[in-house]
Length: 138
Length: 229
Image (cartoon, rainbow over the protein chains, first blue to last red):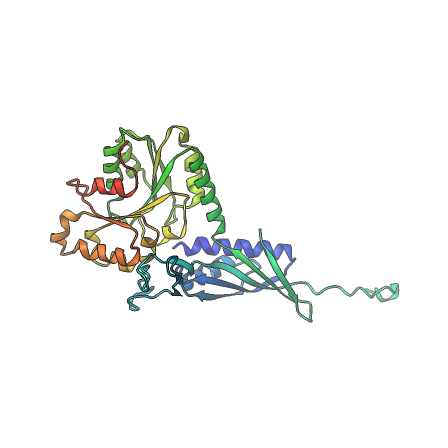
């Protein structure tokens, strides 16, 4: 359910950027979202589509790259992607116990929620070489 | 607000790519950090209480307060979609309570807590319990600025609460497995739930609790580092 409030932040952030760049239309928004975030990509896209209506974002693509969770052991230096004990669950249950020394692992990646790129349409720059008055006919 | 790192213009000069790195949840994190600083400056410890609907969060807070209210100056922030039922219940312990109704949102956020802190007498408090909206999913995405997290689950929710909601337990210092007096009737083994927590988060203290008969309440208090004064 919280995808709606996250989508609101995305739309607000992109609209502000569009204003700064004087954009006519937003074509694509790219994001990186960590797999440890409890964010449903489908719900986020759905909310984004609804919130985009009647804005510069209408019809734009929200493309999301998911980032795997990774852990590091502060004790022995073990580093790897998070191992899940059971893939039958939607997220899989990660274990925070270091398989090498048994200490508590710390999370390195997987909590990202970043906008990484915005593709937009901006007005074509006006030609500046026109200096002759006679060319400015109606 | 936005950090622009690179701008590429296409040959037509119409399609424009802005590459950036904007953390969408940063604003909540910033406000949470601000709440934390504010609480630290007043020497107030805040504890998040999270768990699903009906797990017994309010009862556990109430029972804990009844044991420690002589030693600590306590306040409670109650998050719910609507009603003041929970804050009325807690207020019967004689501590200040603030009800935060989120309306349609499924979680508290740092901004709502900032507003709640404005209404609390921080100079005269030692401890704040922040009870989140009953939900094991969304609240884990929105830090509030608390020092510790207590997650409350109950045997009446069945044997798979931990494995189905792993993210909530990763950041918890204490996990209370509540309503243990009903474990046999429910056919749920609290030890299995406890083993699931240990696998996910070996540093969390797991407590078998019952607000009905008082089991584990002292262990919850100890696990949260509250201790007796």
